[in-house]
Length: 134
Ligand code: AMP
Image (cartoon, rainbow, N blue to C red):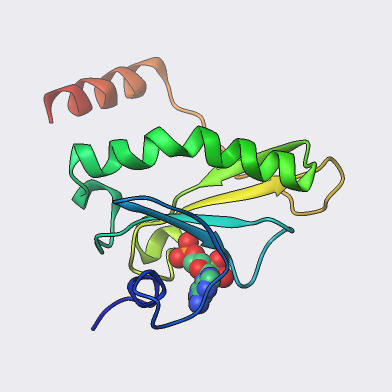
């Protein structure tokens, strides 16, 4: 079955469209964290970022700065979070790749701080070596 976002892109389910081109679609999040909360999605339905081809991902990357600018201009927000969740463990609810653009203002109470850990130089070096070898 098509994802809810594929059904939005095809017009089967209504949305408040912000932008569309050959491979990218953007629309308002129906349950926004702030006014102007926008979702940017590839038209081809894949669940996770690594499943996109370089060209499909580049198509999103080409329009993301412009869409961020539009959201900031239209909302007058002071900043924004661009957030992209992959997998249930990361909080992804809709299994169709999407980038959130979430407008932010100081004092907006949305919060955003994760509990960062500490790692030794050796642990960091070993991990970077492992990643380079992948
Ligand atoms: P995530 O938790 O990263 O998978 O985000 C999914 C987002 O999709 C949530 O912020 C929802 O509010 C949003 N969402 C779900 N259904 C719709 C819909 N029909 N139209 C617009 N946004 C939606």
